[in-house]
Each structure stands twice: as C-alpha cells, then as structure tokens.
Image (cartoon, rainbow, N blue to C red; front, side, top):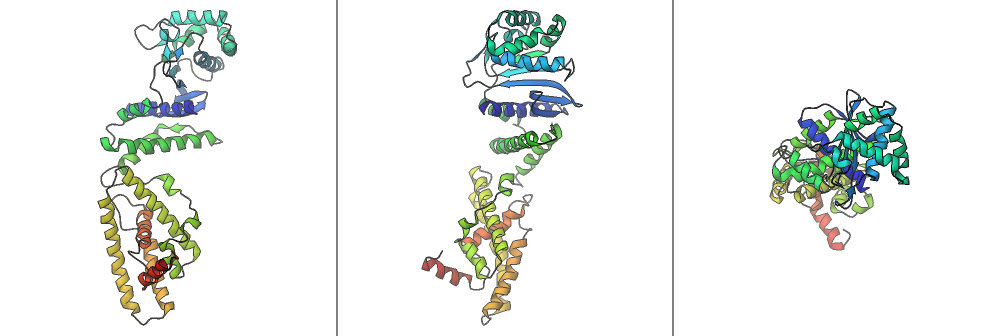
Length: 386
C-alpha cells in the first residue's frame, strides 16, 4: 500500500513539473509500466517507482527491483508496445552501490552504458537468483544490439525522496501558486483530487488516461478558491451522506417540525447543516478563516432573517390562529431554503454555506421560523426533550 501511494505521489510531482514546462501529456498508472507519460498517444517516458521502508536499502546487481523493471521494459520492447526512443526510468528510494550496474545508469558524468550492459549480461548468465529467473530469460532473449539499445534508454534515479519527502518537493514546486501559509491546504486538496481521479481511472472500463489539461485545470481551480476573496469548497463534504437519526433531537430540526415541514425537506436541512458545519470547521482548522469572520457572516445572515421575520410578525399579528402562524412560518422558511445571495466571501458562492449556516443559527435559537419559536423551544429544552 505504501509503495502504491509513493508511486501515485511521484506521478503527481512529475506531472506538475512537466506542466510548468508547458508540456501536453497523458498519465497512466499501472498500465504498461508503473507510471507512463504519453504524448500523441504513445508513451515517451516509462517510470518504475520503488519505495523502500528503509532509505539505506541497496540497489545491487541482482536487485529484484532492477530486474523486475528490466523484465517489464523488455516485454514492451520486444512486443513493440512503445517506440524505440521511449525513455525508461527506475525511480527508487534505495541507493545504488558504487560501481554497480545501477550506478552506471545514473544521469551524471559517470554514466557508462556499455559497462552497465556488460554487467547485465554477466548477471543474466551467471546468477542463481530464482526470483529473477524470468527477467534473466527475457533479457537473454534480446540480441546484443537490442540489449545495447534498451540499456541506452534506461536512467536510474536512486536515493529518491521517500513518501514523506515527496511532500517537501511538492511544496517547492507549488510555492508560487498560492501564499506560503496556504500551501498545506492546496496540497491536501490537490492530492485528494489526484487519488480520487486515479481510482476513477483504474475502475473505468475504457481506461481513459489522465490528461495534463485536467491537472492544470484543477490547479487553477484550487488557486482561485484559495484567494482572499474566495474559500475552497471540498467535494468530499459536498458528497456527504448523513445519519438522520443523529439529528433527530437538534433544536433546528424541532423548529422545522414546529411548522409542519414535510420529512424530505427536514432531511435536506439536516444535510445542509452538516455540510456547512463541517466546511466551516475545516476552514477554521486550516486557518483559512477566522472566528471573527464567521461571526460577521452570521451577523449578516441574522440581520437578513430579522427583516423577514419582523415583516411576518407584522402580517400575522398577535391574535392569529396556530394554523395561520405555521403557514406564515413556512413562507419565511422558503427563503432560507432558497437563499443564494449571501456569501461568506465574494467568490465563495456554494449555496450550502449560507443555507446550512442559517440552520446553525436556528440550532442556537438565534433565529427561527415560527412566530413563537423562542418560547416553545425553550420550554422543550427546560423539559429535557431537546
């Protein structure tokens, strides 16, 4: 599991780096290879990504990681799954031993493709490692010319950042996208989207790769949401399903029962309440908003409610029958259900924020719908019903 998470995070990191270079590409995960970057429908770079729990793990000449990668590449090479100029990368947290095959394939001045090929020939001919036997057989099936061509395309990136350190690299790549104090919020949401997108890709029957344009668009969407005039709305909260029984004795629910609201509308109110409460709490935890900002927003909502409530009270008077009071209250509540013009930030226009916040205020008995909501709810609280 850890290795798979590492693979996905490395793929995201590499994708962001490519986007900054204005590249257009597609990403596939665990098809053909661990990670593939394609241009015009053909893989241009194939990445085998290996994560070791201990960074000091070595990449020896008979390393399973090295030979498993070679077997995958040989299979694709011999079946023409990709072009002869496709680049192969082995990305690993392990270290290549000095003078080893892997060390000869680093992208540095000591790179020696011919020495690496001779080393691979020797290991494939003499090694008794049964775990690698299929890889040795596949490699030996190549002609000397094909072996040389294959090895020329291989680059080993050893000592790569581990799964935790990749986070630091992501921060560095995204440093100019948002303010420094918002980087954590950006990465959390970007990775949440990325992992979700990978799951959709792996479950899809068509196996549609992830487009670079999708990643770029998501980055831009998050950048806009993290501006000073906006706030991020998280998809997991939008999709939240609720346990209705958990809200049965909340004051805001009793307020709706008091005006004879049908159950379906009460469930909608529960959902709005929960989503708004969860989103507001998350904003506070991440420092995206201050308690004072929420207080100002709630005050604005309460003032809007007060204008409408006072108008209702003047209309119904003090001698109105209960049935008429409930009808008037339902008319008032219709405004709360449909409210979409009051924003906590100018560009944060998700309806559940204001509608759910009205339910939060109702739960605190700061606002209500029935003309006598305060007296009646306070009686229930005193009786211990709520």
